[in-house]
Length: 420
Image (cartoon, rainbow, N blue to C red):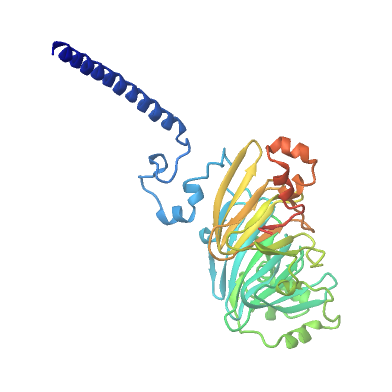
């Protein structure tokens, strides 16, 4: 009996001892596991992490429109200059007959080569006779307008434009724009100089207001009294009657020289698609298609939901963008291992410096449409997949650590919009 009791005690003590050791070991394992888990936890915060929270004052609607600025992707790195500016933040210059607002190097400092103006004219509203020290390329966003110009030979140009149409007036070519029925027009003006400003154009009324009346009388061969009725300040945009038929305006402005043989307008919506894929389409418009446009080239890009404007760069010029519709994001990769992602909506301006790699991805459930603009007579881009598939494969695989099947699956040429 004693032996049994002793055996039981020993057995129990042994069990308790083993249990204590086991508990200690289990605790050590648990602690080690917890430490391992802590080490494996991603260093980059997610939306639910306290590190990503912003409990102080903020602008929730702005943050909601810019999620990749509020919480940048982990692939972003370093400091990349801001490459987005919304037209909605630009000062709107209001007039009877319409308004204008601009995005220049003053609003978007990185945009040194191109500036843009968003302009609205009512039916009959006139952007007065003027010219610029920079060339003007335009895209009709809405409605209908009549444009006039005078070519280098002194011959008149008059035409009507509608949504999707373009025009181009070289430096020093005088021209005007007037809204037509039923509701005028809104259009984007693009200038081949980032320092350009709509406040610094050569205006007919401003010129006349700053010329003595006796000089005007002598110049026009009329009485000085007749010149007393001349305007004494610039008009810029003003309200007038809706013009009559196009044929009438063309006839009365032709004069003895006749109408210009140069076409300053272009029907972009009627041109064939340059490239169409499952992911979207692109229309490329440069001087090879639009003869008058010698200093500005463009691409009108549509990216379907789930699509991406492929990883690429432009060797010949900076890229100025205008977003027409939809939502998207763009990542720009800069030298020194830097990268930044920003989000874009309709009315935003984007900018990418020459040779910097980038892509644009549709983040919404509708088509993303935007313009790519370049200070160049021709359009040029190079795609990442195009580069990799035209380089010795062993060299590429050694760089990226991919297998040959992956490399061979890549597009052999520039697709522009993926998927193919």
